[in-house]
Length: 157
Image (cartoon, rainbow, N blue to C red; front, side, top):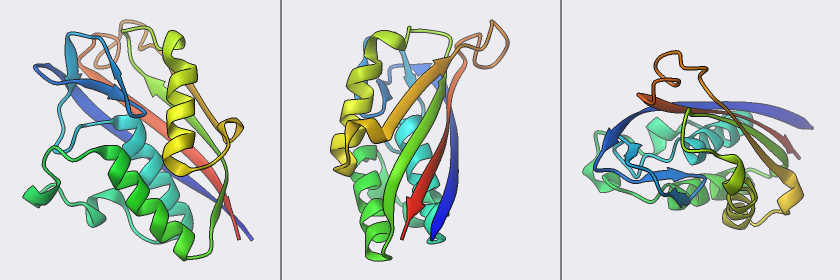
């Protein structure tokens, strides 16, 4: 049996926060405004895996109304969610991601981000791919007001 999952996330970019994409910190003057560390890519991956397995979603498992998750490391949230997916008998075949941001440039960091995601999930690096698109100067992505991520995953059992 195979299933496809879709995950998406969007966060406002603000001063005074770190910009973390796929668990990798980028040197940039703005960062994601979120209850946890705000990593849009790991949040979207988490939702795609949970959705494909038909288990839950990130907001239900790690509600922003619970101070326990304030400032949480999104990599740890992803690990916890993937543990549930594996316990349900599913394994990842591949994950394909798109990050939308105007700046900083993503391409110089792509290999590190893919490698980090594979390490978090304990899968092969060739099972993860991340590409980036700008907002073509259109709000909110193109004006650096926000960053978003879309992810599809393929699970098998």
